[in-house]
Image (cartoon, rainbow, N blue to C red; front, side, top):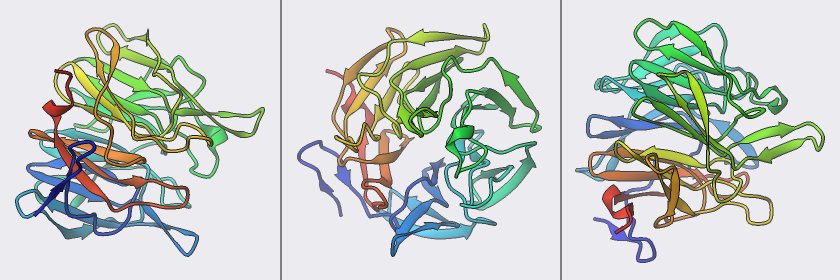
Length: 310
């Protein structure tokens, strides 16, 4: 049914229903859920609406619904057995709705926010979805901010937290371990050169003390890097776009929150800005932007313990 990548020991799975990047991804029960996203056709960017679920037992995808509107680059988190996602863009408009997908596998509107954001970082701690940075307009990255806030998923109440200690944060990696929110890399808008400037910086926010702490930076500046918590103290960091000379990367690291150190691990099975989802014993690597103006339908998985240093 599957083959294994001899280079990295990732197991190839059934491809995504279509090439896709920027989609909502997460686990609901034993199913992997994919919603919305983007791809390219005839040099035109397509904004997507369909919801698909992947069954590991059958190694197959099934369409399970539609979003009310096209959506990509939203914030995502898992809580109380459901996949939650907020805001994001339709390509022309920034959404302000928070949705959830539970075991019914249908997207349900939970509440509406006062404002929206795109390309932000996120992670759930307790019952709150924490949201870092982003821009209010997909087509204006000069609006990127360093704002940090939490959204209570029980009632929709939004609380502003201390600003991120960088000028701005978009398309970076974020994850939660214990009572801390971690942020790595990403980018900011450089008004001097009128372009995106990648970041290597890393910081952690302690929800008990309400303070940011500086961490050792990533080995290189990168945007589009993804984070996936593996257990109570270790986070997988992988993929992204380094610079115009090297472009996309498959490099991966394990960040140990106890020692604040990065350890290289097996690379991704391809170079891209991917989605990473942990479900049970597995980490899934899904789709993503692997070339400029291009998306891939690739999907692989690996047992997450295989990524830890021996």
